[in-house]
Structures are given as C-alpha cells and as structure tokens.
Image 1 (cartoon, rainbow, N blue to C red):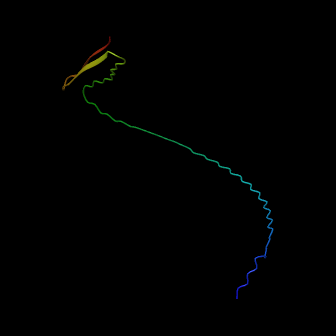
Image 2 (cartoon, rainbow, N blue to C red; image 1 turned 180 degrees about the vertical axis):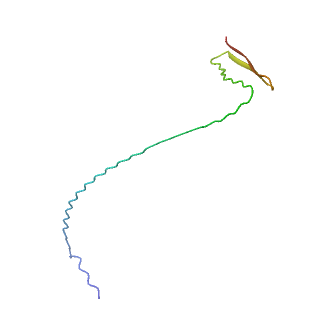
Amino acid sequence: MTYYDPGFEFDKDIDVEVDFDFDSYVDVDFYKDVDIDVRTDVCVDIDGNQADFAIDVEAYGDDSYADLELNVLVTDELSSIVAVGTASVD
C-alpha cells in the first residue's frame, strides 16, 4: 500500500562554509655554458708555383651591371690568373 499525503512539506537548510588558502612559490635557476672550439688545420705542401685570388663582383639598384672575366693558367713553369671586371650604373 502506498501512502500519499499532499500536505507533506520538507525543508532542509544547508549551510556550507569553505575557507581555502593557496600559497605557491616557484624558483627556477637555469645555467647554460656554451663552449665552441673550432680548429681547422690545413697542411699544404706546394712544390712549385702558386697563384691565389679573392674577388667580389656586385651590382645594386636599377640599371646596374657587373661582369667578371677570369682566366687561370697553370703549367709546370707558370701559375697565372688574369681578371677583367666591369661595373656600371646608369
């Protein structure tokens, strides 16, 4: 048998108090040592003639022109480099 009472009331008061404290401390120490040691040893044993060159040709801007003609000749008795360059701006 089911009992039903339409006049039944139920009240419940709920009181919740929350106290929350949060403390945080972060300490980061970062140390990095970089030591780069590059060594290049070149041993060239030249028995005879030697010719070296270093050259740079550049042209900047509108209507600019740069040209290089380079000739190298090496024989048993001769080492020769001939360079002819032209640079102009209009």
